Amino acid sequence: MREIQVDKIVKTVKDLFIDANYKLGQDVVDEFDRRIQSDESPVAREVIKELKQNVAIASQGEYPICQDTGLAVVFVDMGQDVHVVGGNLRDAINEGVRQGYQEGYLRKSACHPFTRKNTGDNTPAIIHYDIVPGDKIRIMAVPKGGGAENMSRVHMLTPSAGAEGVQDFIVNRMKEAGSNPCPPTIVGVGIGGTFERTAILAKKALLRKVGQRNPDPEIAKMEREVLERINKLGIGPMGYGGNTTALDVFFEVEPCHIASLPLAVNVQCHANRHKEATI
Amino acid sequence: MANVIRLKTPLTEEDVDQLKIGDKVLISGVIYTGRDAAHKRMIDLLNQGKELPMDVRGQVIYYVGPAPARPGKPIGSAGPTTSYRMDAYAPRLMEIGMKGMIGKGNRAPEVIQAMKKNKAIYFGATGGAGAVLAKSIKKAQVVAYEDLGPEAIHRLEVEDFPVVVINDTKGNDLYVEGAKKYRKD
Image (cartoon, rainbow over all chains, first blue to last red; front, top):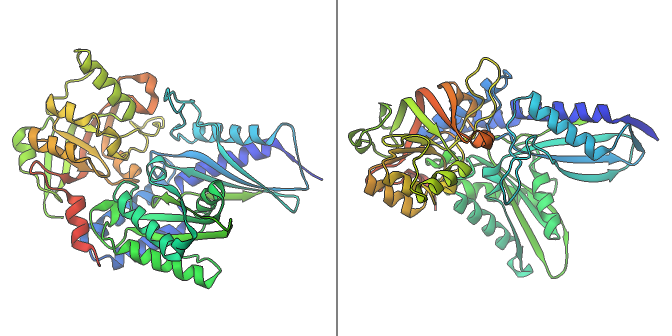
């Protein structure tokens, strides 16, 4: 057994959330550059330039990329040969979130669903654990904003709907979402599993880098087709019109029940914030 | 973008009536923040026949819940939140003289109708450009509902705050017209 002190986990989580909220992945910035060249709409090009400028200002460390610094979603790949010492893992992750949102001047957006009373420190984190081989802990921090999350859906299709039904649902969802989720978006899609599994797959899909295709060539082809269809909607950056409604579409696919075809569409704005570390 | 127009708050009927969808506007002066919880409280006050914490006549409400300010800065990142959640409250505020709203995302038909009727404008700010937008905010002060944290009503002093006209006083909608222009069937 390898021992890992909780202090190390706290610090890692804290640093990841601050880093994710101030420094956007280069993959998104590179895609901004491509779209500034290719979008037919002058207004669209101007908006994307503004987004690029925003990322540059944020990277200086004074203003986070967006004021909505998200609920704190954490994916943990926990090596089965790790023994956490000095406390417990869940408390350590929440403490890291607490410290990160305080010290990083990040907005606390967690509240009671009915009274709407803010919890004050952006906890509890939404934690997804996976037990994996090995003696390390991989932690992925995903601050998830509310505007795009609200546009997300889980839908249980009938198997006869097939690939076409899946694609139509995603495109219609993005059409209905329109300008609300701060396009250009990144669309995470979960297909298969069960009701809850498909939603987690969709969220995990967002951890990919722009341009990174599903390893299955058939699925990769579908990703490209759906992206093209979404960008033909004309919604454009911020919904002002243009050819850049989504930057990418990621499918994660798993087997499902013979009676089911579960589908989840997790919408993410252009600020696809995620950082990871292995300790 | 068609035009760049500079406006100073409070806005007059002439100020808003000249605006067309797609116009880029730079707003200077005082604007107020308000989002979900603050709107609910304001409408509750109006329903009880009480005064609002600020005079909304000619005013602009910015749908934003800013990130905390670092020492020496007036505010943290301050981009728009999605506006449809304020649709239930906006017509009432327009009836008593509010002239502008800043947010992002589609408005309900009744809100667009109320803009036409009461001569008010819905402006869009770039969602997710919170760091850029914060640079146009020179001063910020909480004027009501401090207990709501980021949702408290702030009085902001802004200089050349960049927005785009989404819905004008004639009932036009940039979201509809923009998508129509670039849609490929």
